[in-house]
Length: 519
Image 1 (cartoon, rainbow, N blue to C red):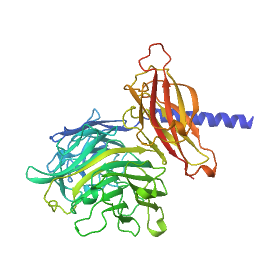
Image 2 (image 1 turned 180 degrees about the vertical axis):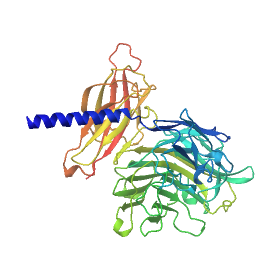
Image 3 (image 1 turned 45 degrees about the vertical axis):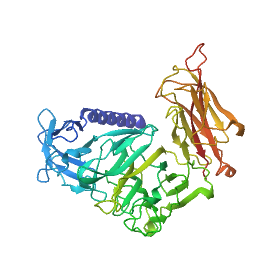
Image 4 (image 1 turned 60 degrees about the vertical axis):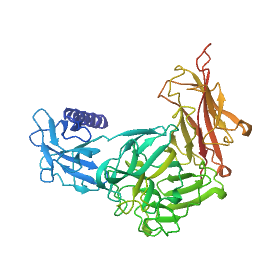
């Protein structure tokens, strides 16, 4: 009886607490509009669940290469809330304000202060908001490698290198072959550089890209960069560099006699071992170069190789550089944690001014791929639709499992189409591209087979039913705990078969995923 009474009393207290919690409205904030890019105007928003007489809103804007700034001004870093829950702030007071790309609105409680930011690397750490909202906008975007990239633009000098950056379609563009072009060009009275970045966050995983330019011969005052960067700047684990920056950089840094031509860096570069220089060989016979880095919580692995190379097996004969940076805080080495990093490409003048040779420069990036699971690479060269086979989650380590998603994003087959996942034991000789096979295309007359059937092609999962475009059918692929598998590679391939008589697309191949089995 005593226990029953206690339980009833506890249940009553919990119910009362839940009722009380439910009666308190949620405190929220949202940004409802921002000015058009390059134009004056206000940021507007609304809040809910607060006393509008006691709460205020702190406003910050982020300008690419310039940092975070308080708005409407450093003297007025917060604004009041109207009785209807809306707020507004003038966020274009001069300078490069009209080029801001990220807006932040933070709800402050009674007596809450709004720390001032003036070119800061992040929204001030001392800020204690009740709720926070962000909004982004860009000068221009381009579509490259199946992703949307924002084009950086600044008519005045900003970082890196105190340069102007152009968004002109002749300076940053994607050609008919789907390759990204970045230029440094004299336009409208000054030299202008180029930079693009993904519009989606990326974190741990494998980053892979190829270039088709003789980057070993860049003017010594130019730098080509390919790197992660978190514009929010809130990584607190790395002293003096909170931007989650991991780089490939091709440059002689203003020294025409420098023998090395490239480097890999886990920023900041100053601690011993954070930066490693190497020399890119003569690429005049074939300018194609593959760069890969794999970012995990404990290390970053870098590889550079001649030609188009998949990560699993890269012959020593074509390897230009290979190194591993390991997280070791005791000796001052820190691998950044994942956060809101974006991937970027840029071409810029490292000493300001102009290229030494006074000529227009260009770097061509022919492809880019990212997989959130280290040890995987999605193949395909746009014959099959991008994202037709996705790496969803998991691991390629022995004793774990990898989750893959099969999809027909183009919707050329009906929902409910049967699907199967195949495992290839050997890739096509041109992987990550493949061999076009007539009659097996989801979006065209041919499909791209990225595995070599002669090496063995096994059915792993059949009888799957696809739900529809954008709703990939997920398959879990276990990796046996067998140390003999470490270093081996598999290739997963999806097949959709529509048995309907007269089907427009009877059989469609997905892209393939290379799986590097890890320890």
